[in-house]
Length: 212
Image (cartoon, rainbow, N blue to C red; front, top):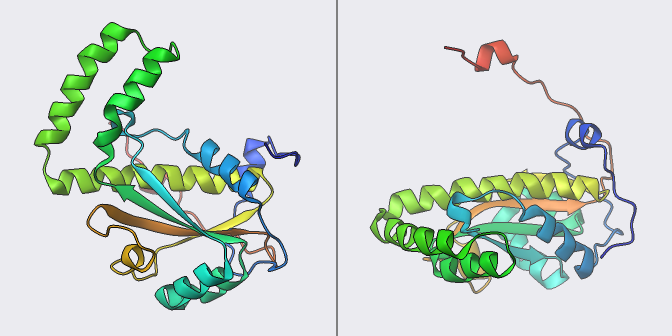
């Protein structure tokens, strides 16, 4: 566990978040603290609790050198951040169904009879859905965990930037992952901001929400 004082003011966390392009390159994040942030991020919800998110943490000079040409329009974030987390969705996430639900029973989170009802139903669902629906599902769940990670990072005193501009069709294979299995969601640069960033305009709620 990190001994750093966390920010528990949620209002400050989400209103003060900025998409930071340049970081202080001298700031590093320990593997222990990064692990803690990822653990906290994975408290995000997911379809059937399959937790399809997978994280590739790129924080070494060698890893960043490999990533930079794949994210060449966002190279400042890659080069100056403490780390870039590549978020993927695992289309085979249902392989963990039995483990997830058995552990829930073991920990007292779920009665055994509920688990015995749910597991066959969920297993059948994933066996029947189309690849397109499965892909859409893991992308939605990946977006949920990505947003949670950005807020968690801010609570730990760091800044982030979600990055969609990179070679999604090349990144898995470049880092030795199965490109057929792992669907790229986004990159998230994490570090200490070198400047304060700037706020952005949001459309008013009465323009984007509808009541019936």
